[in-house]
Amino acid sequence: MTDDEFIDALPADHLAPGETMTVDVGGVAVTLANTGEGWCAYESTCPHQATPLGGVPLTRKVLLQCPEHGSMFDVTTGRCVLPSQDGWSGPLRTYRTQVVGDVVQVSLR
Ligand code: FES
Image (cartoon, rainbow, N blue to C red; front, side, top):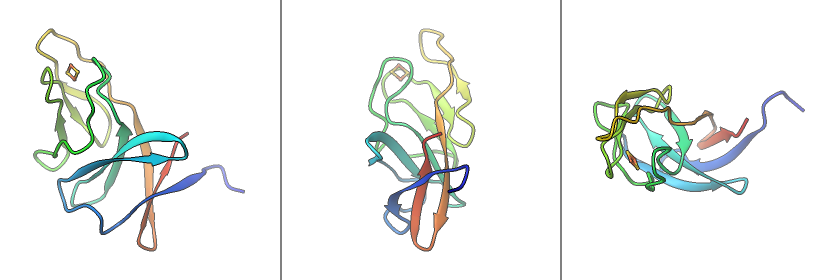
């Protein structure tokens, strides 16, 4: 037993760089993103008004723009780097990832 409980999420060859996808991780919907240099995981809906984020491609390697009102997040930190059209600028919840063998794993803690 370790401090971190990482759960298998996705085969590491499943997404090309810049692609994202929502998967079930231990009963929680999590969106995975391949930045080309690593993997990021974050909540599957926009924290502004719950627009689904799975499948929304990354821009500039690590930026994700919500298609609904334009909030832009850095998926490596969850920080909002551009507020929504109505001025909302809260963070995106992120999860830690690791790659073991050819599997991307996510920690929900
Ligand atoms: S739902 Fe994403 S910015 Fe509004």
